[in-house]
Length: 68
Image 1: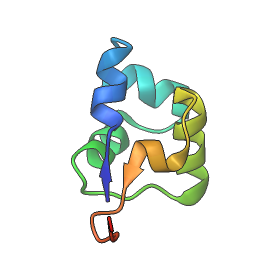
Image 2: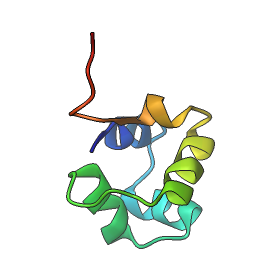
Image 3: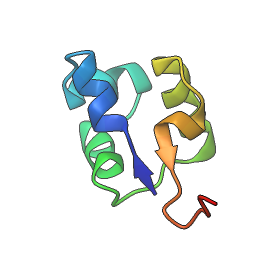
C-alpha cells in the first residue's frame, strides 16, 4: 500500500520519531509504513488519518485500485 505519510510528516516538519511518539509506535514502524514495507492495521491507519485531519483514503492509496 502506498502512502502520503512522508509528505504529510514533512509538511509539519516532524521527524519519524516525532510521528512515532504521537502514534505510540516505533520510529522503525513509521519508516516501514513510509517505504511500503509494512501496511498498518486498520486501527493504526485510522489513528494516522486522525492525526493529520484527513480520511484514510487521503493518506493511503491502494496501488491495485481501479482509478476509472
